[in-house]
Image (cartoon, rainbow, N blue to C red; front, side, top):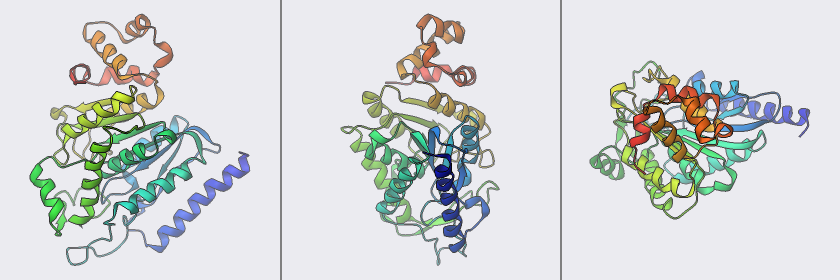
Length: 336
């Protein structure tokens, strides 16, 4: 691809996004598509899907960090999201209630991402994590890795899943006044049901279908999702993709469901970003990551372990930083 052709493509993506969002009109400048483009195609291109009722602002910190590593980043506004209006129970925001709308959206943006780099890495937060998992199962040959943050596969309580599955009511978020939230204050339950159904389908499908390698991140303090289902997903993916990783933040850190920004409540965002960078930059299977953690717990330095295992070509600088920051016992203890 020539530089001029690439420049035409990126300029077109930005122009079309502005035209589309101006026509909505957009709810808040933080809700606009966010693109971090280098002046040339990059070895990796990241495509991120924000959470339910939220907007692209959620992936701005991680997107900027990956851009600084030399990669292109796309964070599109999802259908029905980020639209200005006086939304309430009598006039709910226009969120889609059909999975096909989101799935086609993901497939369309995957095609766009292919124009901007070599390896495609996708990711998402909450329902965006659900959508990423679906895409990783739908197009595993086209995706190098998937990053799932607090993915919504099901609620933390069965009664919550039951209410989502049957009630047509309008629900208002408890944390709607959070200064870091720029999305909608509430939604109709059928709009969330789309992702509950998709999550359960993913858990069934992954048992017998190939998927792209995944990094799955949970928090024990997350009251919105079932982290046991995260672990179930990880176990299933790991059988076919040994380069998949799983990490769960300890409850004592109090990292909430909205873990992608400090303003939304994650005081340990730097650790999350470091884990993500280490995963995408390293070519390291899970069993070796566990071995590194185990030997470091026994008193060896990171460099010593890497040398003794003869895996210098598979690690990256961010992995050294990550292993200094995370709870290594959590990696060792997590079941396979």
